Image 1 (cartoon, one colour):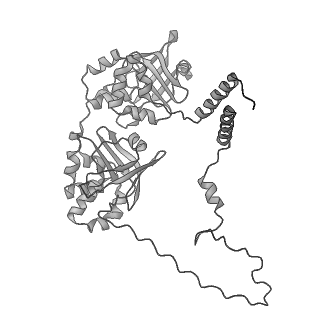
Image 2 (tube, rainbow, N blue to C red):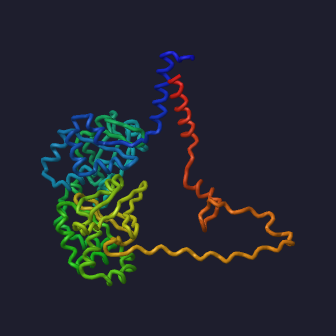
Image 3 (tube, rainbow, N blue to C red):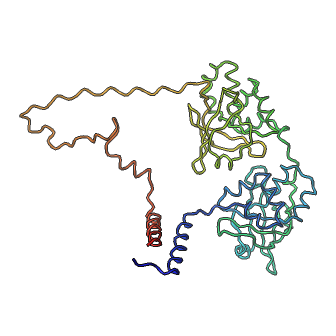
Length: 407
């Protein structure tokens, strides 16, 4: 039996490893990236506790303008609330890719980049944009758009780059912004029903107030709360069923739309499984299942499946999302019975013996096909399975190389 030389076997092994690694995605983890650089430990810490790290990891094209520990000390000396710190750091997360090379090749020498602060909807006007300008002497300046054109910080170095996916760069100091640093009301100061009423959930908000369930929601604001709010049109259609519930049932149904834990959109997209609600009480489970498929997040009860259609607010410790259906708990509603199968059609009379056209050329039905379904389901199978020829070839080649190592 012929054996490969040791050097050849080693080369084949590394080639096999490279083929397997080719399946990996371009996913990034900002916490791990910054953990390799101790000078950004404070910046890294606050990205984590403000949940900005999860938002960065979820996005596919992003630039993080990191500031060293000394720069963060200047920010912390202002004694901002955690919500204010989150707004300021959001201004340092650009929703575009700016690697070191691109920074020195900006078209017309200047660019205006949208930031995560702008994306939250909390930034008034254009205060959530950052001006980037290529300066003389190889320098690149950064400044908040509403800062009168002043470029407060400069590019220091590139920390980590995955081209066109994520760029982590160091800038010299925190970008000052009066809008980002403005006092942000804490959750207990927030009028939850007023917020929902302004964002298309007035009917649901009114029911919270009228039923007394609002207090349960308010009591959980400081500790963490996620609300799934059916839109006004959805609630309008559901109202006849709601009116048939007892007073206790109405409170339970409304409480079923609240979760006593803060769940950002990034968390919902990464965590599948059962979730307890404000209505959960011992044997009365009142839970539902969170499922995600790419960018779509659904909430599945035993009765109905609802989809998250929008974000009203996502600021720790409160998240409020709109959904396209009312969540129906099995403790209050029964699943619709499965419709009985339609009666089978009467059999056709047997053709006479002397008839020359007694279905001579017809093919018998496929006995494996379910009743009421076409036997030929090739189109459905092809629509549900995607064949990747390149990946198949890589797998076959990997198997061949693996077998060669054993020869």
